[in-house]
Image (cartoon, rainbow over the protein chains, first blue to last red):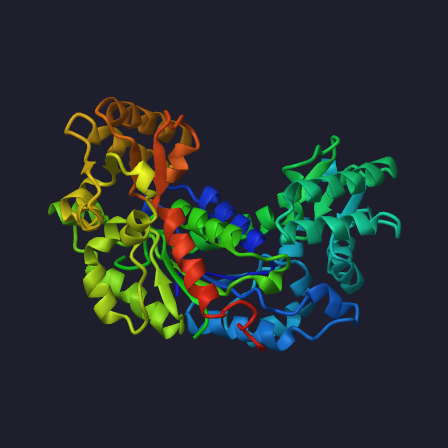
Length: 237
Length: 237
């Protein structure tokens, strides 16, 4: 079916941000020019990062329920604006009848050559342990680093604060992380958790090239739909 | 089922704004505290206002498809962040197994007594011809007026500009309408089209008490869900 499926709720504010990006990226002058989207915002999925680190419940059965729901809803492609959940990308893709776009691959593919001096990956601890960003960067031959153990807590704080609705605090925590990775030689930063772009509105980029994983997934999703002519075909093409 | 259904896409930016309000209004410190939401953003529904005015195709079959979709998705309540579509509220409610919250009733119920001196209703021409805001205001005994024929075009412009993504122009058009209704004695304004609150960010309220129909529907929706304990019960209560 010619509509987009979004598996959201991880977290809910990041899902709203992702939907906003879908709307902004679609060339449209009236409602009927926009793309049809089905969103399952299911915030009760167990904490993805904790599960990867072995300190929380396995979210895979819930992730597969979300994928099944969107398949039953007859979407033609699925986007999941949550990086850490991509630890289970293979399992979800095998379950889904329709393609699932990979947020990290979309983000890494979008890094401009000139910004790829040294990339710092900011993400949940779980996502970094999972290593899907590192693999995607290795494939493109882009040098990268991850925050040291004194810096990762700033990233963790940022993500937790945004999920709690404390946007300015989140911006402050992100600012601390950015200052360190910049001092350590980063030229670009992957905001590899969909809460981080929300925090970035409240802090200075310090001249770093910030890559927004949510924006790149949205771009890949809109392009996927437009290339297949899903605009204006929802009801009575 | 203990989850919220949103029939959106009318328009898409207003739907994102409505979802943002759901998230903001939910008391939550982490993802798992939030409410599960299924959104059908189906922007191809024929123009509601034109249909009411007799100059466009009947959207009712599409509206019923959206209602059917959300019922199949096993939502427990439906919110439709589009005022004009409430012209067909009775037909949609009769089709739905679960309640549909009424945006205009939610908005009018929320008008504070002290603001209810004289209320101006800003909405699509179709919604004003349909008259559901006027009925809801009559029921509460609140005096109201609607824009005269020289002023309604500012409202129409505003709605069209927001749907086209021209936010500042939309704010300017809204500002013109607000100036006239204030000069004509309004003390409060119902933003009775879900695009109008987006325009209101770009203009001055001129001291008028602005009632946001989208916000009031979101409030009614979150309250409906919280009263029924839908928080944290999505997967494994």
